[in-house]
Image (cartoon, helix red, strand yellow):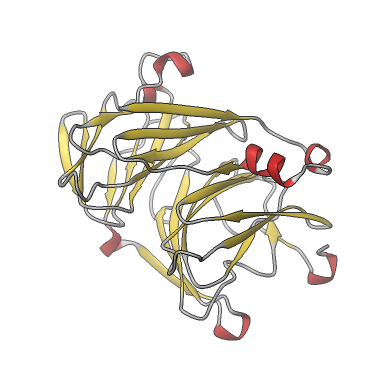
Length: 281
């Protein structure tokens, strides 16, 4: 088993003004998330979010970050969100196992001492996408089956953004310290995940793009200040970090899906600051 955690630092708008393509990719893109038998994580200084992939094969796997975080065990001062995008798996939380089929999610509260990730079939491994944020209070662990996810259709075909947002870890239906997490699926013929663009300075966000319809599908993820935009081109199952001051929208060469995760001081969605189209540059 290989374990890797890359640290990415926080940036101001002035920092990225003159970044090259390679610098943007190095600082904001997680290029490899899932690799059989490995745990691959990124620690971003943007609100100290940790995100990445756990891909067990023959043996159970555990995220152990006590020394890295200065704690006795990983979730001593953190909460954790999980969504499985691969084969059927099992997640065992402090000795209690739960089956996780594709697209099932889980919220795991602060103080949980052990979380084990397993695959039922090593030839078709589970792909656990994990996101962890600092926490100050313990909220109950909760399985979030995809079949029960809160679905919110939004957008229209005219604007090429017809999609369904599935809310998993969401303040409207459960308590968390700050973590919010969900899964959005674009309809065939739609390509924009949101437009007009917006910012929300009260929380940062990561996007993990997945379920591309073809090998040559790509998503262009736009970020930066509204009047100084940058873009990063993503392949299937790659993720990008979005600072709170940055716009965050993307367009694909065909339809796709993405997992979004947010953290910060505001858990509501009515704090978005819409960017007028004539201000985008």
